[in-house]
Each structure stands twice: as structure tokens, then as C-alpha cells.
Length: 418
Ligand code: HEM
Image 1 (cartoon, helix red, strand yellow):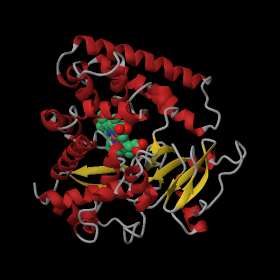
Image 2 (cartoon, rainbow, N blue to C red):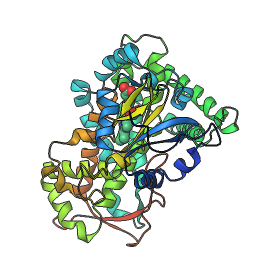
Image 3 (tube, rainbow, N blue to C red):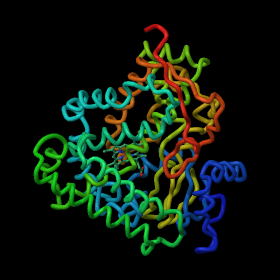
Image 4 (tube, rainbow, N blue to C red):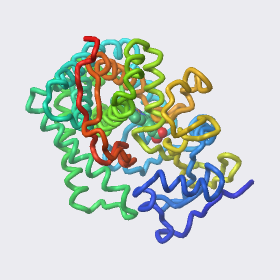
């Protein structure tokens, strides 16, 4: 079998983590160009790593070979969040997924509709009265935080506890993102210790909620038959993490940028009146600007990807930005073309990986969609919008969560036909 193009280098000295974290998009583009293939190897987190940048490779990794490429139980997620579904494998992961999925689908999901509508109204209702242009990323992060804390913990923004949890989640998050940047895991750094203290305080609040609240998500989670007593609190810690509001804010910001200005007026008008077209816009936003750069697995045996040998113990990482711009599947891959989803790519949503793919895809997929649609419909029905000032540097940064490096500012006005 063919050897993976590229080199995994020698331990520590050959590590390319800094180069990757500085600019993951250029890192992959340069190597795709150099090796003439969208699957190659390098050394990341001091481990030989297969980079998967093609749609076919991503499907092979996450679907066909999901029992060969496993989650890494030593992942930094595990340090910060403890035992949870994200880093578990095998039967344990299956059982957890089976239990938790019921909380994110069907009647549970439906029962959240009113709350989602209320959050959109509360946070987005007077944008056109503001005299200053709105910095949209922090605005949408606030929307995401209200959604998450209300849905998962029954905590409302007017409560003092809301701000306390938000601050602790931020400290906890800073510990998480400080870790992957360094090859030496900075377990002893002060930032990391502060993050662990924040985690313990968050867990105290969560345990208290699990004991006292019988209503809503926290009540349902508390009554699920989970394997360990700590399981419910560990998962709530994960669900209220800063990661989710940031990912939602990332997508809403990208949506707002893609549809801003007079040149997109017709697109906004059509999206306002045609739900299918809005759906295609949201697919295209996820395709071009996935919030997370990708996901990592470890090969539990000698295997292959795209016909290249992947030895036992190698890591494999799918890079959603690159997968979504695979020219084999997406023609004019860098262009924003919602129409592709009713044409050549019709019915091919399953080739995206912004929410993962295969049996370990995102458990919140449906909730994300319901919320994103509600927020985008609210914006479209109540506003026109334009970048203000009209010329801004919209260069994206991709890590830890994608967004324009300089937070864009936007002026919202009431729609012309109202
Ligand atoms: C825009 C928001 C979100 C994005 C972009 C997102 C993205 C992702 C991605 C890419 C994965 C796969 C990771 C991998 O392949 O290693 C994933 C998994 C997961 N997501 Fe999300 N997610 C979002 C929101 C949510 C929400 C709201 C929840 C629930 C509260 C959630 C819970 C999970 C869980 C539990 C997993 C792990 C599933 C498993 O390992 O079996 N996510 N998510």
C-alpha cells in the first residue's frame, strides 16, 4: 500500500503544531498543493497525524471506518471536562448516545420552540434603534449564551447566577484553549489551574441545580439512568461550555456577513419568503465557514485512508474547511453559491462535516438547526443590514472557533416594505 505523502518528522523537533495553529488553512493548502493530494501526513501535538481534506476521505474516516478510528481518551477535552461522551468509545459511547439523544430530539426539541423564539425576541428586538453600529459577534455570543443557560440549566439573564456562570465558563474555556497550542501540555500553568478551579465551581452550581430542579432539561437529565452518578453533571458542564455559544455566534456572524449590503438585498428578500432557499443559504454558510476546524481520531490498528497506509497509533484529523472546499464535489469551491444545493449538490448535505459526520456526529445537530433558522428568520423579517463602515477587513481566523479576526460592525435598519 502507498505511503502517506509528507513526513511525520521526529519527535518534538519535527512537530508542526505551532505552524498549524497559527494558520490551519494555509498549512493544509500548502501541503495539498505540494503533494498533489488531499490526504497527507505531518506531526501534530507531537503525534504522526494523517490530515484528511477530501470529502471521500472524511466519509471513509468518520463513517466506513468509524470502528477503526477512535476518539482519543487522552484528548485535552478530557482534562477539562472529565469523562463524557465526546472522548468515550465503544459500548460506553453507544449507551451514552442512546440515552442523551432523547433529550435533543422529538418532544424535547419541540418543547424548546417557545423558549428559542423568546430568546431571539429578547436579544434581537431593537437592533435598528441603536445609534452605533452593532458589533455582531459579541451580540450573537450573548444570544447563544442565553439560549444555552436557559435551555440546559433553567438560568435566566436577569439572575445573578447567569453572570457568575458566564464568567466561570470563560475562565474554564481559557484553560481549554491554552492547552493545544503548546506541545508541552501546560498542566502546571496558572491559566490551567484557574481553569480547573472554575470547572470545580461550575460543577458545584450544576450539582445544586440537578438536586433542586425537576423541570426542563436539567430535570430530565437528572432522571436518566446514566452509568455513573457524576455522569449528568459532567455532561451539563460540556453542554453549557463556552464552545457552543461561540459556535452559534460564528455561524450567525458568517450568515450576517454573507448577506450584508445593498448587493445582497435580493438574496435577503428571497430568503425571507422562501424557506427552502434559506435552508440552502444556511448550508452554504456552514460549508464556507465551519465554526470548528475539524475533529481528531486515533487508528486502533494498521489501516488505510484514500488508499494510503495509516499505521496503528497514528492520529487522523479531518479538516472541515478543506473538506468543504474539495473541488471534486463542490465546483467553484470558494464562492458563496446557495443555488448549488438545488443543483449539482442537491441532497448532498451529508457530505458536510461542520457538525461532524457518521455515528459520532453532533448530538445537537437538530437543535442547532432549529435555533439558527429561528435567529436568521428573525433577522430577515425585522431588518435590512449593511457593514458600517462599508469597507472592513473580514479576514477569518479559524482557531479556536472561526470568525473574522476583527469583529465586524453592522448597521441594522427596518426592512423597506414595513
Ligand atoms: C453551532 C453549534 C455546534 C457545532 C458547530 C458543533 C459541532 C460539532 C462537531 C464538529 C462534532 C464532531 C466532533 C468530532 O468529530 O470529533 C460535534 C460533536 C458533538 N456535539 Fe456539537 N456542535 C454544536 C452544538 C452542539 C450542541 C448545542 C450540543 C449539545 C448541547 C452539542 C453536543 C455535541 C456532542 C455531545 C458531541 C459528541 C458526540 C459524540 O462524540 O458521540 N453540540 N459537534
